[in-house]
Length: 500
Image (cartoon, rainbow, N blue to C red; front, side):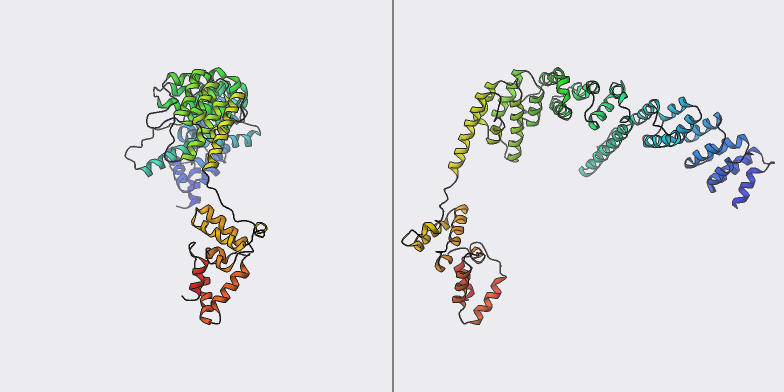
């Protein structure tokens, strides 16, 4: 059907109501932009205006509504057909319907909330009013969260589903932060919200540094992970410890504002079954003990955590990580003035060097000195375990001997020693100006050929070996690109050069 004919159909005076509506429906499907042109005409009947609002696609709804005189029936038709949209929120406010704008803002889909802020500032030249912003926050919070069903999935599918759920939650929190960030005066009210306070406290603690004291105090239920205590599970006690300590590290001001609440968390996890010694097959969790040391104030409970330091057995794997985490736990316990010094003194002999080093210096002189003494003993024992490396004398020392070459030959026996000794012997022999060709023959060829100090003597050895035989000299070119094993001596290399 021809486009001008459809336009003419709508404007005919003798069309029935049904025919007019049919024409609008056809235009909405075939040429929806024509509906905007129709809305701009003054001779469009009132009933057709309602039909225009109902049938126009959502992306043209704002243009149609702006072209038509505002009327309640048009607003109701738009909401009934299209639901809440950012354009309707702004147009309601622009036409004096602020209460309706707030109601629609609370019904928006979460993905639309950021669009409202942009359109509002474009329309009015000012930020969103607090009541509209709060309604948008409620819209994001009202988004349903269907339970994540992982049954029947393989590992890859489970990981993917969890990643998608985590990403979706991250997007949700970013939307919330975008909405609450510009209005810090409402942060306390958000944190104390009886329905959605937990989500909003999480957003504030996650995204805002340097929160005001009043906000931090309002966020205490999340900091202290009160929700986890309502779930009777001993395994969650450690989770609660770690979460609370992590929030305090992120917002250290909490330690000054609510020390009693933090101590209460440490006390309650012990009451709920947490043990510093850990579980039977796992042993202590150093991250949990670190958190407990940062939060706790009961000397008896803290002493039990110290005892776990000495009783723990090192694992067969990830030993370096285990020692690092234990050292952090020792540092946290050593920094807590409520930890009995006697308990720390008792476990010092069981600690390794890394754990002892974090106790030096310490506020208690006796503990610091004891830690230093244990460190000295460990270092002395480590030195004693190290093999003695016999060094090749320097050229100045060799020059004072009656037979320097014989002295160097005496060091060749050390080539059969440990790797460190072999390396030191080779380096010393190659460095000396008293080293002779027969000494070089006993050394690894790869080191001899790379030695700048012995380059002249090596060249003479090659010349003596090849002599006037061109085949030997051609062998030199062939051997140049042949990889050398570490155990191949320079003498063996020269023999191969001569073809023997």
